[in-house]
Length: 303
Image (cartoon, rainbow, N blue to C red):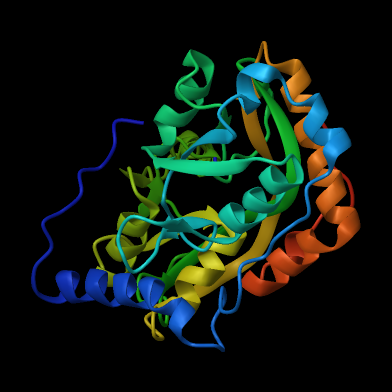
């Protein structure tokens, strides 16, 4: 997942129904045993050697303070109570924290405010489907743990006739601050350079709003990280469909303050430990995203 934002619309009528449908689908998903996320929470046993490596300033209160954008199902989103953050990102990081003998506490925040929050010390880790890229590595350390690409989605039947390789003149929804903004901006420039109409790029603070804009017909299509696009289609009750293939796969990373190198190093070791003990595989399979599994974790990998 990778900037003025589109305002959240006060949806009524068909658009409001679409948003409600998506919200109910996401919140109700754990109640159906056949749905992603069903079943007991995944846990990991603490590793005393790794726990001893956690800097005192981090482990003093027994908690890792995490910033996350809780609108990005199935990675991180709100449960039925409207407060508890759940998802495969959350389940996996909980296991990583447990491996270090700590508990993760999540604070929901706009996506584009999380990395500045990590840099300022407001959050000790950013866990929000951050694609690792050169620009982000300038400001934070990043520990890789998953791989995802970009996926397009349209309303069922593609009534707007969107061609992902030639979307000139179409209205496309993306979440603000993501790599998909850069992607669609470059595609729009290619259109105008060729004398074709620009792509209308509608940016939304919440991915759920971008998805709802496509369901309602406000936008012709959306771009999102591949597991998010696939989940949105599955939860839309047949209102959406995927368009084209997944492309430009890249690692997700946990974001850690630049001067917290030691903490970033032990996080990397903790990710490797949950890969080794099997809790990593269990967490991803529980959410149906095992296709993005990695076999090793890296600190600040080349993007």
